[in-house]
Length: 72
Image 1 (cartoon, rainbow, N blue to C red):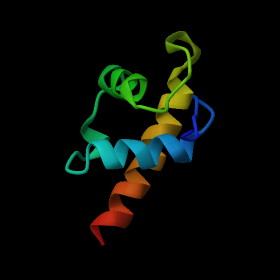
Image 2: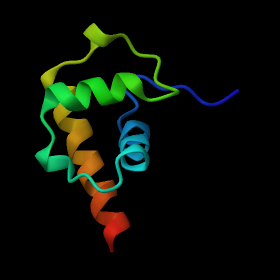
Image 3: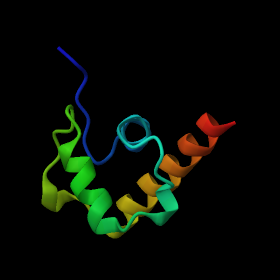
Image 4: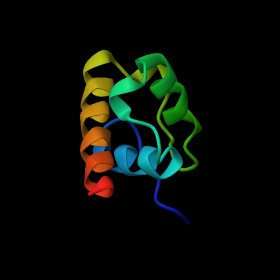
């Protein structure tokens, strides 16, 4: 069974978002879109209402770091 993750698994979410949207610059994504994309990730099990702005901001920064690492 694949590993599942939720809102507190910031690095896992960042990796999965980079895999799902490899050409998207994370800093151009609105939080509302990112929230939707996270909920659509195959192994994501978190509740939609359990996110908040600080978690989304942390995810966006981790995603940006992963995105930049893969571009280099």
